[in-house]
Image 1 (cartoon, one colour):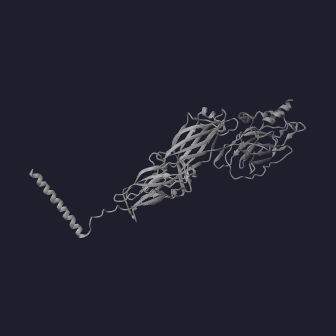
Image 2 (tube, rainbow, N blue to C red; image 1 turned 45 degrees about the horizontal axis):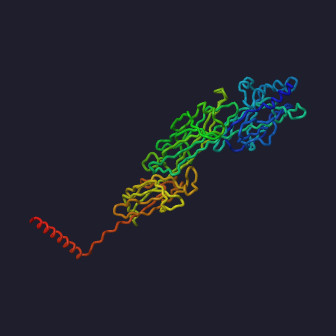
Image 3 (cartoon, one colour; image 1 turned 90 degrees about the vertical axis):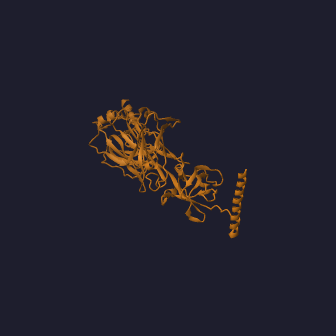
Length: 542
């Protein structure tokens, strides 16, 4: 019975560790990895999966599975190294003692036993076997000498917007005992293994609806970064989790402020992180560029290393960080700060560290997600005030209310939200600096009338000597595409414009015209003067 027990133990226990890798890239077709075959050789069919809810056992008794969880992952690199442990005894049979020793290297609950693995070492006579998963997530390792192998994921593919934490090593023996076969001592020479990865993606959102740099008390954007807690392989623990937020320093009045860090539980509920570190603002080692322009040059990092917090995290939980920043207006001529092209970009990625339980420094691993980003758009509007019928005759001293209405309303409908009261136009021209664009809100295209605002102005003060124009006028062209292509004319930079003309006040008509009229006015004036003098003399007699 001892022989039966050891073989069943090998079947149930060997090759249990699991994985966690980095990102989808171009599928790579890999031919079977072939080595010199012999009468005592076997094959390992490796099936790489991603998206499983748990790491689980990488193989079920070494047999092919038709319903393995997850989906195939191409581009993952694996290396097999033969351990210094022979499964064949001097008589040419499978050695039960070797099977038992191999079984002790790993269990499905705890992963690889690092100390025993190091003590055993590797068979230097056998070169490592290496391969990369094809478009079906598969590698075929052929011609493997009978023995026990350490399987390691040595390279991970790229994934748009996500990352895979590299997998933990696991152990597999070939051949593998088949308890269901007849005769009872049958062995599986073609072993199937299913290492599974989970994907780590960071998400970022922005709240900018109704926020206008032109408003004195409403120019703050709010950013939220959601960092998922990774599903780590067995026998590994999370030692650090960080959110790195990057931005262009000149676009914000005082950079970005970290408002809070929270843990959002998958099971429900949100808890404040009691202890976290904030570093920065720090210049980026290398600025982030898009289409040849710098879009981020500064970062702030929020790091959680508290063991109590990290040990209480579960896969599916989320580290959520909230940041705020007061946005500068569009940069005008002669200014050193401001939004240069109407686009305000914000970037974020997540980094982390994990290690083998209780073994700091041994096989410590780091992971970094790709950078994700959001954009907001603002536009300066030039207001020109001129004399009616004379566009070049600029007028000084006008003032306007600037407001918005829902996209399905008219400027005259009255359903308005005030943005700037009594905006002054001096010298005939000025810029409203700036308005949030009407077609892109909270990091996505605007789709509802409440989001697709119309911007309007209405004159509240006319230039001296001119008629007040009370007509509400729509400002057109406050759009995303125009915001990133501002125009500079003279001292003003703007993306949209509106012109308002004023008619002169009418002159008061004289009672009569011509010489006779003038003479009449003079005589009337003299009569008034004479009458006044006579009245004064009469009063003096008393």
